Structure formats: structure tokens, C-alpha cells
Amino acid sequence: MNSRRNFIRTASLSTLVGVTGFETVFAGTKDKKKKPSGKGLKLRFLPHDLLLKHTFTIANSSRKTTPDMLTCLEFDGIFGYGEASMPPYLGESVDSASKFLSALDLSQFKDPFQMDDILAYVDSVAPGNCAAKASVDIALHDLVGKIMGQPWYKIWGFDPADTPNTSFTIGIDTPEVVRQKVAEAAPYNILKVKLGMATDKEMVETIRSVTDKPLCVDVNQGWTDRNKALDMIHWLKEKGVVFVEQPMPKTAIDDMAWLTENSPLPTIGDESVQRLPDVIKAKGVYNGINIKLMKCTGMREAHQMLTLAKSLGMKVMIGCMTETSCAISAAAQLSPKTDWADLDGNLLISNDPYSGVQVVNGKMTLIDLPGIGINNLQKLF
Image (cartoon, rainbow, N blue to C red):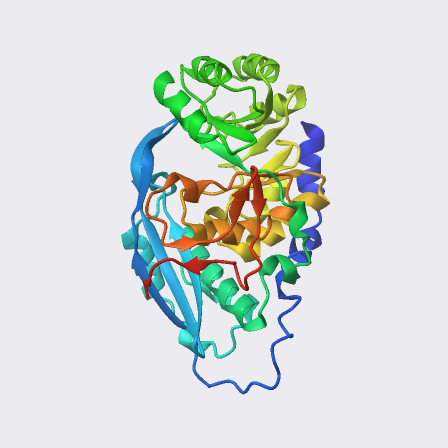
């Protein structure tokens, strides 16, 4: 424990600052021959409730829909698309997102390649609102990638062959529905199981009665006793579980560090790791982190978090909320450099207005389209 505290105290601030400019490596590569129109960025947005195929239950909540805000950035007749997915437990809503996005004046920016300046301004307008900020960040990345004529995995220099398998999430439910969900997940090579209730062992045993695929589990802070948690993790290891995500409350830092030190499986921080400064705090408390665009304000900061976590020797998972193929495809641009992917949010809904990244034989398969790599299935803007 002392070594963890010493690490946090002595971690160089320059390490944190040093990763903040990675995403602008191509910011000066715009076409010099094209004269700017003099017009600034134009932002539009509209709400789009996501309809879930099944009631989604985790340790502390259930829902059948997820509020979502779709965004569009226009510059010189080119359009970039983004979104804000806002599960109620995150504290954002259509109303808060509308208020935040309405407060932005992006017309002041005449050059979309000034990404650091634009996104720093967006982040400064109001605290919080991380998903709403992510909706602008994703749309900006899509726009700039389209101007450059390249997908972001190529701009970052990632090999699309390195994408991992994505897990498919099995929410907490009755044994009958759980077996049905497992059957629907047949194309996937790894399953993510939601735990954190009295039915944890029943959930795992039900899944094991119909499949021997590797599992990862997400407890969503549902365990509060570290000794019982450790016993459970030993049992889960015997059941073919690969890692355990956020087993204890994010405030139980010392208990979580003890659990990680003694756990036979890697532990991954999710709710406890929101934005870039949280990565250093997670060192020694977890073995790895779960990066989600909706938590960290988008692709720019997600890339920074990935770079920092890897430099600290930590494992990285790229995750998601319930989202359309827009945000899923945006997150997938980072996936070649991650250890695990949990990018199934678009597969859990019945009204996806976009198509994008595909899952082929359980593996994330990036599409060679510019920007974030999506096609519109319906005209929204």
C-alpha cells in the first residue's frame, strides 16, 4: 500500500502533460491548396432514444431504453457525426446535453484541424457533461478524418489486424433469459457477464450449462466485503473467467488495492477511472483500466489515456455504453492497441441509424472508410 501511495505522490506531472498532444500529430497535414471558406464549424444535434432488445439489468439498476443525443458538425459541405449516450446513472440527460450543446459557439473556429483548441474550449464551457462533450469530439474526429480521407486507426498508425475479440454482454436476468442471451451470442468468442447480486453464482452456472466460452465479469461495484470478493474471484477462476471488472465500490481504494494484490485474476477499473488523471490514481489499485468515450469526453482523451496506461504497464480495455454504431465505430479505432474490447453496445439496440465496424468471427473488424468509419442508414440531419 505504501508503494502505491508513494507512486502517486512521486509520479511526474510531466508524464501526464506529455501525452496531451499526441492526437495533434497530423494537425498540420491539411490540404494547403484548398482555401478555407471563412465559415466556422456548424453544430447540430437531435435526441434519439435507444431501444434495447432486452431489459438491461446491472447490480444497481434496470432499463429498457437509453437516452441518446446525435450530433453533426459541418464544415465546407463535409459532415462529421457523433453521439452522446447517457445511461441515467451517469447523471446526464437529453435536457442537460441540449443545454450544454446550445451553449457552445463553434462557429468561432474556422479551421477544424485546430483540434486541441476546439476540444479544450468545449471542455471549458462547463464542468461534467462528459458524454455531451464526447458527442462533439467524435463528430470532430469524423469530420477531420473525412477531410484527410483516412480512418483514424490509420492516422494513429494502428494495424487493423491487431483488433481484439469483442465480448458480448449478458445482463442479469432469469436463467431462461440468460440461456436465450447466450444463444444470441453464438458469433462471439468471449462473453461478459454482469454480476453484483445474490444470484452471481447462479448466473455463472447457468451460462456454464450451455457454453464453455471464456468469460469476463463486470460487478459494477456490487461487492463490498473484500474477503468474500476474493473467495468469489477464486471460484470464478475455476469457472474459466479471464478478468474481473470493478468488483468493489470506487471509493474502497485500500480494499481494492488489497484485492488486486491477492487476486488470481486481473482486476479492471471502470467507474473509478473516468478521465486522464484517474489513470495514474489507478496504478497499484487495479491491473488495468476500462476506457469509455462517454466517460472521458471522447477519442482525443481516450487516446491519451491508452498511451499513459500502457506506459505504466497497465492492461487496457476499450468499452462502451449502450450506443449506436457511431460511437462504437469511433471507439473501435483505438482497439488495435488494447488488450480487450467490449464494444457491443450497438448490438443491444433495435434502432441503430448507422452502420460501421463489424464483428467477424467474434473479432472487431475495422472498415476502411474515412473518419470513424460509418455509413448513414437514414437521413437525420
